[in-house]
Length: 221
Image 1 (cartoon, rainbow, N blue to C red):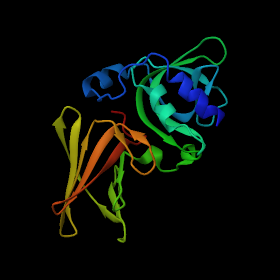
Image 2: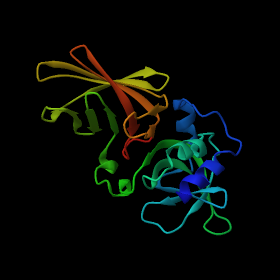
Image 3: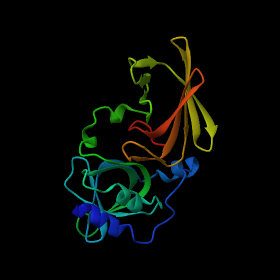
Image 4: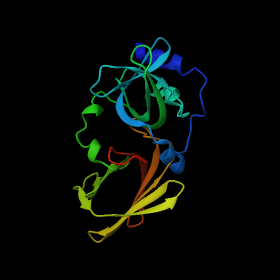
């Protein structure tokens, strides 16, 4: 695939370290003047380009935050389709469509329809894992827990901040003790290859299931 080859070539450029932890205090301070956007990643003429959802413009990506987006995009680029990215940074006017100074990389995955997700803007957090399959969707109304072979379980929750960007969501509902533990650590979904900024653990009555997570559109940590 032409895009895949281009992304691999782009990834050979000098980069910061590939594995980064999010720094909560630095992130909050740096949000001033930045915009969070979702869109498609592609490569042309040795450059990585970002096209926001619903727009025709494509911005040259400048990885000012040292997110290793070039390497991560190259690792996902193959014949399976387009790359979707959820990012935060600054649009800098310039020649052509301009430049996007990328500061925070929330998520990169193979997807041609993620721009059309109707629930993204309402989500605070999404976490998921495999073997067995599970997922948790968190919003201001509560969290909905899905597990293989069981109906979705909607419950209220209490959030506890643990420091260093870690937190957990817990509930006592349906005669079960349920916790979702989240830590700011690069995580690769073993099934889809999606690269996400947080590791997650779903604990139900002492049973632990591990996976990855990312913030939805209604939370900007």
